[in-house]
Length: 175
Image 1: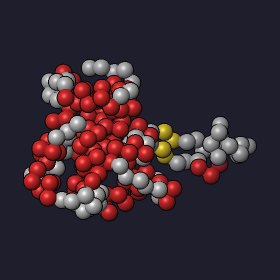
Image 2 (image 1 turned 90 degrees about the vertical axis):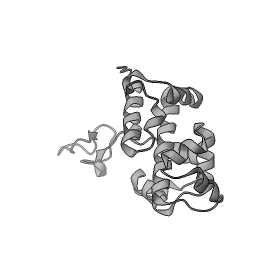
Image 3 (image 1 turned 60 degrees about the vertical axis):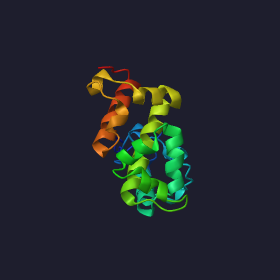
Image 4 (image 1 turned 60 degrees about the horizontal axis):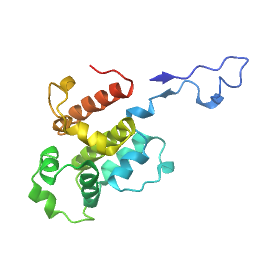
């Protein structure tokens, strides 16, 4: 995190930061990815201007529920199968198939899909290609104990572990 400097008595601004925004703690954009990326992965259009910050926008989407068609779109983008996604969402593929295109998914399912969309959007940015990132997600990674990164997608903690690993790769830290 980065804390902006406090305005001194003689300065109207510090660097290029307007005086009104001093003492505001900012989290790096990479922690959440841009809001456009995850929504593009889900084929959802949201007006981010209507929300005070990215977290409020994400909360609104989760609370409102994603349409079932977002799941289909995410499956296509990630290359995950319906069976894999059913395992990730802790449900059955039959239950997922039963939902129709405009039916809204539960908060839990919407939250997990948004987390996965954030991860894949970030991975595409870091790896330079969604196809390359998808290959990495299916590879056995030594830093993850020889497991496939996609096997971590069934929990928020697992997704955070993969986000952190991708962040290390972004910064050239391979361990």
